[in-house]
Length: 338
Image (cartoon, helix red, strand yellow):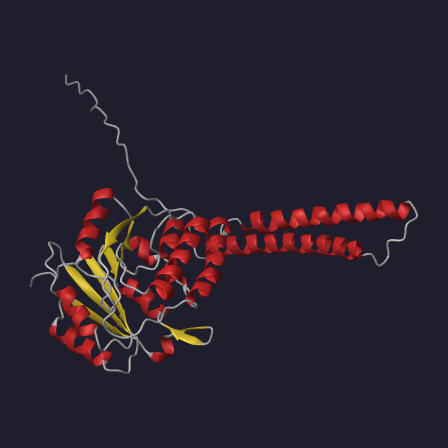
């Protein structure tokens, strides 16, 4: 019996209420002429419009290329009272068998024909992540392009990860990078930042983008404010996740110092015979003093929590990209025969 050929690339496609275009999406991937074996991972998120039945049909017709995972309604992660597909995305990554993992939306706006080109770039430059950049984006100017441009500029400036198009779903990762991505909540937009925190080498290439033919986008200008909220969290992760005391301690000592100076000033006034009771500056001094102590305490607790997190799960604060062993050549001992 011939052994099953392991795929080089796993194309992960999350689906939910995609009945109008999931057939064309799967056909476009299956029709790609590639020099490498690939598999399609479909995470069907309990659709009610017939998407699940279509995916089952394709999985039956292409059992060697399509692996279908049917999610349940109760598995969905709820954020701000709304059910999301985050669990679906995370599980797709975990089920992938390929050395490389490609993310692709099922809405036909990204083109799967770009995947071989992105894979070639990854191998040529020994990159860990290749992100797509929608050079000629086919979306509305005011509701999509402008808010997205503002969000992208802020993310680049605050995180230091200079990717032009954070909103482009089409990306390829090395398997080991994708497995450790902590995609919680709405952090899928920040995948390059999360990968960079693992020490990943990231580049970007221009990819094709098509107008939306079916359905309605779930993204709009209201998403910009959610992105800003998540951006604050990502800045903290990027700079202080392994050293929270540097943030809370620094602010705490500054606040404590200001409070101490204010109270020393008031003490001098009191010694000079002035009445300081009821002065607003007295309340401000106490707030700075107590606030500083609290922030320093929070920093200590956060430091202990982070250490407990890493040590309890045997997680490393670093990643070894490659291991080179320099083997010293020894000359065999001289044999003397008598």
